[in-house]
Image (cartoon, rainbow, N blue to C red):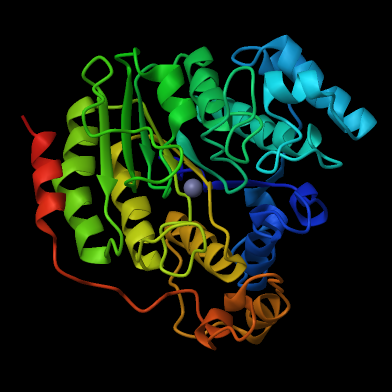
Length: 370
Ligand SMILES: [Zn+2]
């Protein structure tokens, strides 16, 4: 018997050195924090780390239009876009600004997702925290996402002969780009939990695709107990019944209490429970990042994801080296960045946030059980 291969972490230094600009929510470091924290904890040996390749334009054409990819490359080369390009491809807007790595950075996350399909052909676990750009559209940027790496990951798995894929998305925002790609594909199960009434305002409870789309919009103050209920009553039963050849989890970190872009109240324990529960349900497991705009919440949550995937115990208090990684983070332009609570520096695990399971949650879960 051969030992199971260890999970693979795909990262890149490009996320440390690039930013969407001083006022954009994605001005904060995220993936680099996870790389630094996992290394500081001794959890990321070189044998488990792959430096992300950058996707070539031709590889992106499996879903994105060549005109759009050329527009991103031109924007990177020239540093600006014409009004016509802005109109046509939604780049050079407040949400989707032109920045120096406007092609290279998303093409690196896309390269990781394309590579993941190959790495997972015969089974395994891959983690790409830079992935999860679930709003990208074939010919336009959307919601901070220039490309759609989850779609590319699913298409890459298909190319390797991996057919039935369960896509689970626990980002605060609905994955409109992924649903656009696969709503009519009976071999892609689509499950999303997201904040109701929030941009992009898609992802209605009543979307059914061809019977394999399950959206669960949730109200403000969404708590850990409610997430556990949805996991037990909806996510796990649907995934098990689907018998997927692979699972892709978009593990956005913006449903947590301290995130500035949502009004939900999960602790990171809720995300970790989903990561752990899905793992045994398929031989192939790809975990992607996603949203998450509080640099401490994202770094701690996504570092914990890697610990869960490896079966590492999360200590109550971090090592001094890991604490230094968190103490060196800065979050300008947000009041929460002024006086961060001590546990953002010294722990990975949030205090749990249990609560009542509200009637609208039960009713909406029931709507998917007929
Ligand atoms: Zn989000």
